[in-house]
Image (cartoon, rainbow, N blue to C red):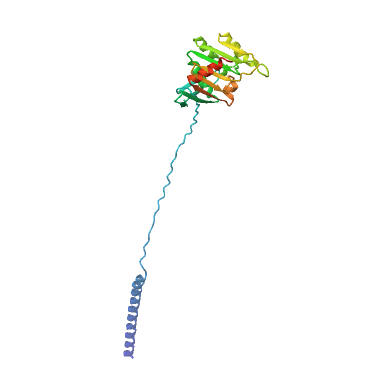
Length: 252
């Protein structure tokens, strides 16, 4: 029995050793086999940087006021009525020329007429002839462009210019009493002026300066025509044209 017991113990020991070896092989094989079965992984991280660009522009708005008139240069005319803002107009020459006849024609719209004409009246050297349908003088109005033109006739007379004026008075329909104040003012200051008292109507708006410059068109010498209304006239620089109109003036 003792021999059998010893053999049994040896069998159990071998079994235990084999079992331990199998466990070790299983563990080691499982570890390496598991590692080999997992594919290598690559992790890619993308970083995006976003920038916001802001551009600021400042736009400045300008108002350009252009007044076109028609005198042989660029000039600045300043009108300063009492207790009223100063009105400044920069005028630029625009001209159509007919070289053969030496004739210059300037188109004068609305207020352009006043700025062009008053400049030429100030520069008159020898003679001014005026035949006007409506010439309204208002001594009590501190800002009236008609007053300016009428007074400039007196200024021209005082510096030795020959000034002659014809103002309409009696028409087919009646008398133009609104012209009397201009007539009385000019006469009181020594200007050669007369009222056309014939029944036919002189509807012209004619100015001749220095036997060379002619103004003709729709502008009367009244505040409404010079400052408020839409009007159009022309300035003609031509000795031949001026000669024709001077002859016509003598027939009025």
